[in-house]
Each structure stands twice: as C-alpha cells, then as structure tokens.
Image (cartoon, rainbow, N blue to C red; front, side, top):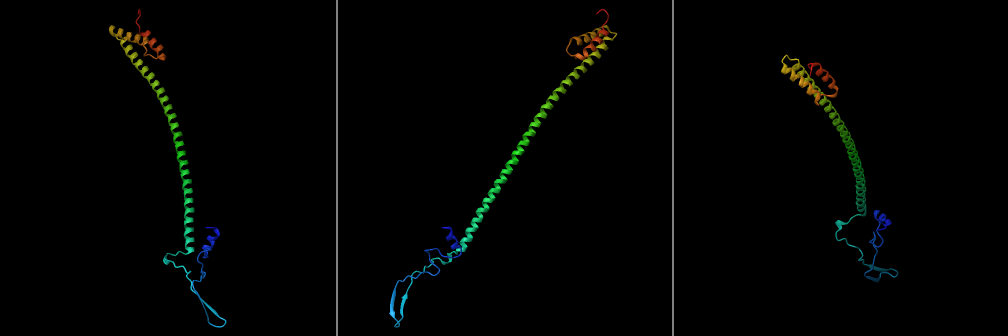
Length: 192
C-alpha cells in the first residue's frame, strides 16, 4: 500500500475504487413517466450498497492504525532490549575475561611464590643437615674424649680410635675438621 494511502486510511477516507462514504448509484432499472408537463421522474433502484456479512467484525481504520502502531512500538522495544542485552552480555564477558586474567596473574604469583618456597625449603634443609651432622660430630667427639680420658685402657683406646675414625670419615664438616683434629691429637697418647 503506498504511503499516502495509509494516511488517507488513518483519517477515515476511503481508498480509490472501494466503496465510498456515499456510494455511487448504478441504475439497474429505470422507468419514466410524465408527472407534469415539465417534470420527468426517473426512479432509480440501486444494488450497489454492499452488505457486510459479519457486521460485528468490521474494524475501524483508526483501530487498525492503533494496532499497527502498538506492534511497531513492540518491535522497537524488542530491538532496544536486544541491544541492551547484547551490551550487558559483552560487559559480563569483559568482566569474566578480566577475572580470568586476574586469576592467571594470581596463579603465576602463586607459582613463583611456591618455587621460592621450595628453594628456601631446600636451603633450610641443607642448613639443617649441616647442623645435624655438626651435632652428631660433637656428640661423638664428647663421647670419644670421655672414653679416651678413662682410666680403663680398653675404653681409652676405644675412645681414641673413635676420634681417629671421625677424622677419616665424612661425618665431620670441613669447618669442624680442624677442631676435631686438634682434640684428637691432644688426646692421643704419646707414641701412637
């Protein structure tokens, strides 16, 4: 339907070729008779009046326009809501991507911290091992010295042999070897 005709429909004007407000008269049967000397009467019977088979269903053009405008408003509203929903979806996707990046950064930091903790634990374990060996060395040095100082010759020999074995073994730390050697030499009986 051309746009200009939609406007005519909206204000209640009929379309060209449709039934007009005052429908045209088509003569179906005509008769003539003389009424007076100067008057001629022609009777016209019209069959052009259209009958509406369902008059209770007839729709006003204004009502049709209102329905069309309501549908148009619904389409515009739906388009706006879809655009808004699309923007919200993009915003939520950006938030999720940001959270994923933050999680990845936190994971990297955690991995770095974990690696540093492992390195520190290994360093502490090595220090603990050195301390444990020193403690064991000093315990054995004390015991060997006590046995070497014993009046019992067998115990003294046993203590001295323990001190010598400590010097030759791997239990003594390099920092402690000079001390253990000095103690062993000091307790070694003359002639050995």
